[in-house]
Amino acid sequence: MKHITKANLLAQVAALFKEHYVLKDGSWYQQKWGLPVVDGLLELPADATEDDITEMIGNYSWTRLVCDQCRRDVAEVVDFDFEIGYQAVRLCGDCLDQARGLLNS
Ligand SMILES: [Zn+2]
Image 1 (tube, helix red, strand yellow):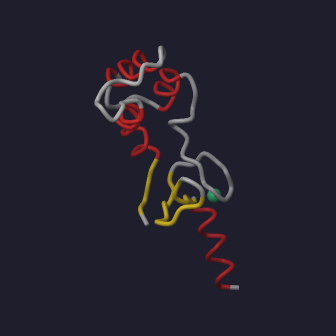
Image 2 (cartoon, helix red, strand yellow; image 1 turned 90 degrees about the horizontal axis):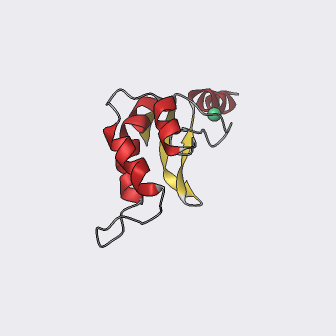
Image 3 (tube, protein in one colour; image 1 turned 90 degrees about the vertical axis):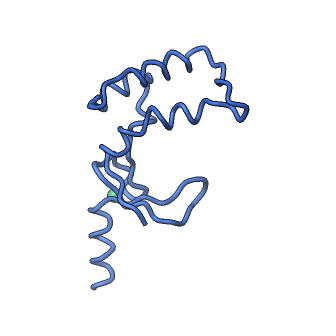
């Protein structure tokens, strides 16, 4: 398990976006909107906000931190080591509290 915060996520968006759009041979994936976005992300200051990053990308898909139980965009989650589908399961504090309540009932 690992703890992921929105701040952690935002700090990694540029690197993850770049990683996603670099091909195995090291060249850039040539989507016409991809390169300007990567360049823009890399030029954002370290304290760029979620809105800054979302505006640069054009959608919130890279800045949302979603709990897999309640589906809310939250400030922090615990990321579990098992996967359902293609990504690890992430749960927010409220859902973990509810789960703990079930175990204690
Ligand atoms: Zn939740």
